[in-house]
Image (cartoon, rainbow, N blue to C red; front, top):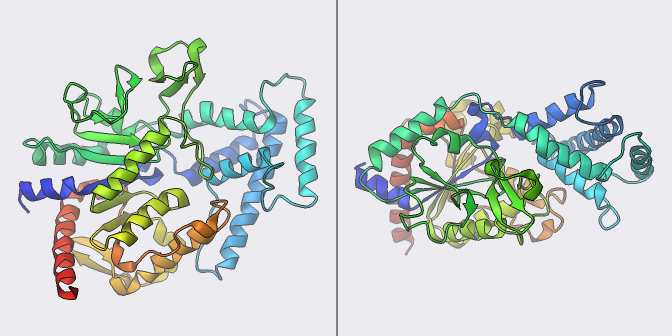
Length: 420
């Protein structure tokens, strides 16, 4: 494939990343974050959480374990569900707002346990500015997240830098990266080149409406952080800033990020604007490369699946070895389930039903969204390819994957012509 062919494919491609993308940098996966919360709940000394907060965390963890086991049993052994930090956040929020929405499985005499924990918290010797559940959430966001998202290695990003230098030096095209991650991996990896634009100019949020204006940025990557970032803050006047150069007394929320899935605060800027940019990009692009995302957010899934269902020429490439750990593919012979194209191992067409059923099961589950009956349940096996690569392996094979996209594109064009 020539460089101009790469340029065309890149212009038609949207990159989307989940927690698995940042794993090689040393950042924790969402399941690992939950494991760390469990360890912190067992500390008797030097814990950021009070004694009652630790008891509450253990209670919520027991609820999550119950529900994960129930979902796994309901699938008749097809799927192995493991709780994660997003589910912890979701249940924490539902318990806090239980007068309006009673969470499952927190029913029966368990509700008495919640009341007792709240009473204990209010009776602790130390005074509390926040309620029990808001206090736990605040400590997770302000203290745990910094530990969980510590960067220890950025070498795995080098193939992306090399690809940009080798294939994009003669073009003004930019890579469009959307992410649910709050870490600073891409920003740190490209800080010397100032190659990543996140919507900020002079540390103040201006958005992406004028990104074609080179006076704003000479970046090579437009990076849309749908759930905010560790270094974002909202001031009392509503201004969104990079938090490093501002005094805490002027900051209302820091870090300014969405914790967990479920009910999204998309009507609040800049999250509303970022989601709209995501929706517009899905409409504009033909190829969606999804890296390190496990599809446990039905709100995001609906946007992907809706666009794929409306346009048969669009294709999603799922890059994530973890998904096969949750379905029966992991127990199958590699040769039976996968084939090799352009030196890339992909799931055979006749085996894609495993992924289809897995995604449908998530979309139907009321635990992930209050109105699960409205979620898009089905995704055609023709609308995606599954590639079981880790993110560092993906970046090392990016050129081969783009070649594969080009060949699959040509095959789709021929198929559409035949049916027409």
